[in-house]
Image (tube, rainbow, N blue to C red; front, side, top):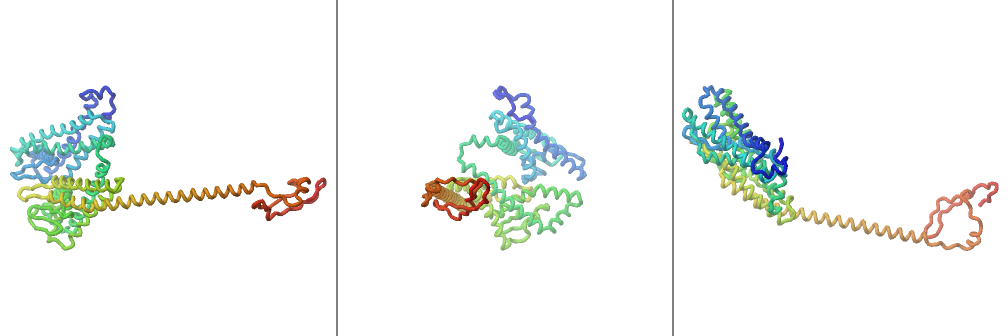
Length: 473
């Protein structure tokens, strides 16, 4: 696919897109929403057929499911359904981000980026209006009320806006870094915050999987309540969709916060029972009071804070910057926990609210990351800088020793050279010998001779047989 950068300079100065750009923008505007509509249509029709329905109100169910993926609260039979699975929403955000990232490159102009963002938001908004009209038309035959217009627009803009922002950053990277004027330690806080959040989510997932493994009998009973293979498959699919919501609630619990499930509530310190929907994934909720060993789960946020502090120390150059980066990362983790908890929670009709305590989750996550993370960042930064300084000192010492040794060797060589070059004193009677002819190589060979300070030692003269015309030595 051709990117918006592959245009000449004249095309860049125009306000309206060229025909090629228009085709690209149409793909950005409608491809993610169109793919979602196709998948939703297949799922809705298949579900209605398996349920033995006469397909009455199919368009209303299709529109309601499309809006539910965007986290738009639905009114069904006079009850509000705002607890919606976040897994399809995350997949939609990823699809929008990939589509937008293909339309921009690091050299994209602001005009290109603005057109891509406008296209990524305008297409879904137009489809959202159509979905509202479909629900309004189907409300006469099915028990579904039309969602509020402003709530619908807000959620659609939030979901697609998040995907568009991620896609623009991915497609134009590292240009956004070059255009920013924030300190380097502030930019370095993003990585530690993401790693700490990943540790929290991983810890919640491990807790959920362990709870489900210990509640297999309860899960089997809930699946049997589906009334056949079709019902069991439906409950399994529903549990898979809501599994990320349960993981987020478990992540809040391990930090010391509270998660509610209707009248029931769970924390590492105490639990309260209550009536729950017959969904197998809810078997992860404890069936007894809090155990004495549950506070051990607090090791998960401690590990997340440790990772945050260590990453902040490695991503910065000085100890103060490491502390600042860790503090900002703690704020980012807290904000992320608040947003995720708010989106993953909601109400289910008369059962009440499900999900983590949003405010308490943000406070506990911030406290762990700030206290433990900042301390770890300071200690790690000090140790890393100290290691670097000592490492350079030792390296310099080795270099100095090497240079000194070389200098001493050079001096020794010079002394030997001077001694060898100095004229040796001639022994007595050497003048008369010097007048005599010097033997040639054929006359004698000198082997194993070593000259030290102009003295000849270990010298051996080998007599050669006399030959005609030569004089033996």
